[in-house]
Length: 84
Image 1 (tube, helix red, strand yellow):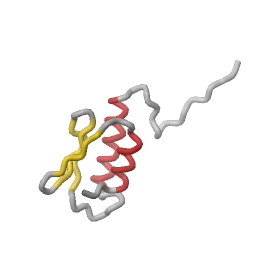
Image 2 (cartoon, one colour):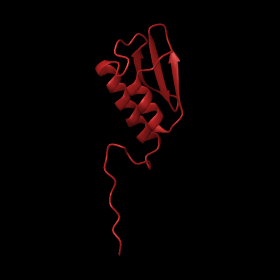
Image 3 (cartoon, one colour):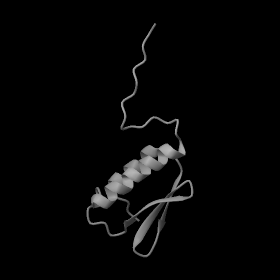
């Protein structure tokens, strides 16, 4: 079972346990037992799986933030610490 690179990268970066379940035509991604997204098994664009794959990658990052709200988001800049 091959996962598009953008989705696999998002899963690796999220740092939470996940599961990919293979269906007849689609693969389902679960994070914390909750269905996060699905994508076609025969995704033609192997790196992104098209716009749908990019949407799934975004949903993975969103679910990971909800799963662990104290974790910093990779999209947001880190606040600078000022020394006294």
